[in-house]
Length: 466
Image (cartoon, rainbow, N blue to C red; front, side):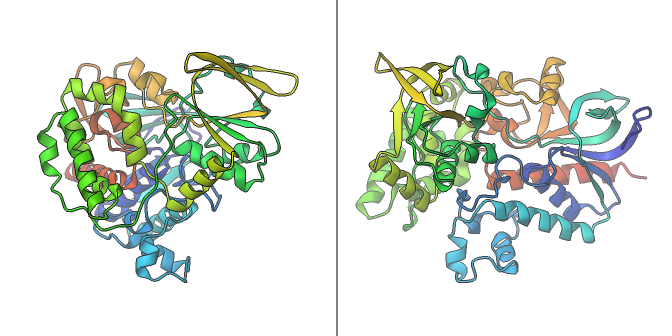
């Protein structure tokens, strides 16, 4: 693709080739009956990885049991079927395999395998283009895309599956640090290379922190790992136990405070029966979108201001074996968790000096390196993807509710512009919909969004054919 003078026309553009983009392509290949021309734009060298599934490390596990990770809503055992096909975990019976938290690298390989299989019998001509899309503008009834090499493409429909953006480190002076002593949590090789005898600071205490800690210990880290967080809350573990039996539907009619009190009561009642609180959370898992959308604006803001950190550690849980590793490291002092307000960091002769406030008092730590584990950037104003910034700057898109992600239809996936109009030819997936849906990051949501987007595009494109 090097002809930059004359735009060429395709039926559908999928922008992003991580899990969301790969899932969209997979469902398109499965559902289309006509010979559509589709291009998937992904500058990374390997498809279906994104930042979540790019890790090759065996200690980086899925945070969801394998039995709930199928890419196909109508085939719930498809991922475990794939694991059987590649002879992974042959010692497991079906129940054990379904309950296993497998290395994340297996999931990217699974998506690529299913894409290859779906492509063999599909009339769709799918081309993966190793370019990023820099801009998208409406032009003569199409979406005109400009790529990094100057190529221009006109697409009848577009799916924005841009994936997760990394949140910048919230620390004065961090930008001036030399590259060899700071790494992003999702720069898996960069984090591993920091391991040694030096103390390392990790900014953030969520899932990205967990990845960094287990990777550093696996790479031989002997120095203390210091985790810095405003709330000092770490992800909690999954647990085996009987399912909770309460009806979660009445929660949807309750305001936030009543809802949370009711959940705590259900957890106490479950505990009295020997049922873990995790089972109570699992009962509301299918209602994630409804739980958010039935809160009024004030309660949504209250949740974001006061409740989201506590919610996240209960909702986004980790494998019990990983939690045990963290618990043991905390117990023996190899891992230390600090509740602080960060002030700044400077380079010293021996490494770095981090300053913070702890309970109002000034404190400092001498460190050898820093890891940015602050997680996914969800604020529209903080998105660093050039395409998304262009869409917002030109009013083709607008921030989602509370400034989170991009605005999209609550009962669909169509992008909404600055004037409040939905564009029927542009769909949005994944973390970009967090302000509208809240639950929009995990595979159960992504696979359904991807199938819905693919079906919509197929229906519209095939209906327009002569």
